[in-house]
Length: 252
Image 1 (cartoon, helix red, strand yellow):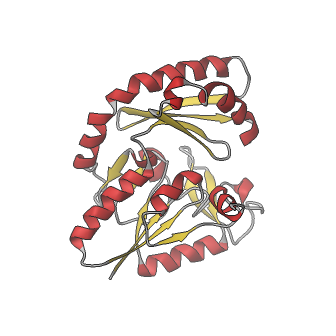
Image 2 (tube, rainbow, N blue to C red):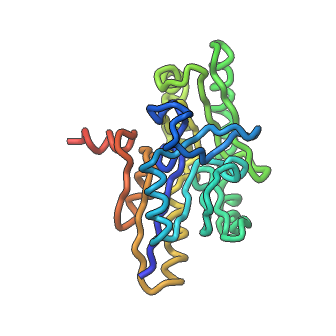
């Protein structure tokens, strides 16, 4: 039996200091992710460090993250398996080379969604220019524009939700299903429907099933957007007091 865990990173394995409920001098914190200038900006608690050590002993660990290639390189953990980046848009193999089959599939499908993404993005830019504090950017990785993300300087969901409710939710390209949105903390993303973690993890599982006679799979994540890929796995691992945990805890 070969064991795999498909593991979200931010807010699952580490998080910003603000979410650690402690200060940077706490000796039990470990810096695991860094800004481009080398400043530590994401930390693992003692329990999260123990979790990594436990997983590393018995699982092949496949990170499944919204981070792009540059941000992933600034994560200080020794991943050895494939990597899912950009919410599923890109898969890297064990040598950190782009998976050509997956990339070809994405590049064949993406043009049909690009014009629709640009249409809603122009409305987002117009809205953000009217108010202070919004930080919209298109995510470009491996020279390809994949999706858009918006943050706000106040760091809360509430301000982003005004943009979501007034511009994004009612947009025709959202309503007809070509694009979808995701909001979790200070991160509001607008993505083509073909970019999602579920499809990328399904692709990898299919490949692993050809390599191994039996698989045992775990999925781990904190966000509502992680639920579809976690549901592909035999077991789920969800951090307490996260978006996905709270959604399930209060479901009737």
